[in-house]
Image (cartoon, rainbow, N blue to C red; front, side):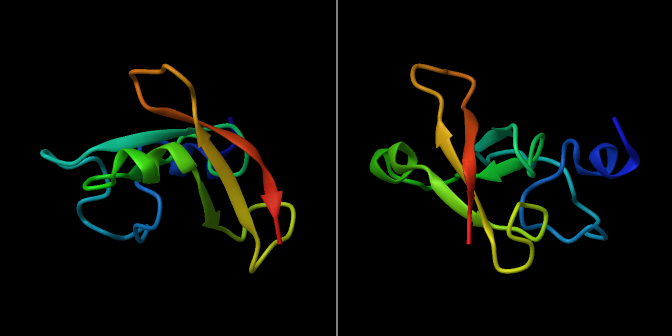
Length: 92
């Protein structure tokens, strides 16, 4: 694992790197992003409906195939009670 990957582990997607509360917070629900450019980050899904969670997400990131302005797509893993979402590709 390189230094960049190390820094991303256990962090919340969208949180500033210098946020004093970088890790998961009590009372919040998270999905773990698996694979792709955001591997290891947690996505805060607190308050999401079942329909929103079933749809998956396209998350803005500069780390994917398309660089700035691109998005990494993640879909919930069927039947996974641990809430892991798998990377399905990048899109512009």
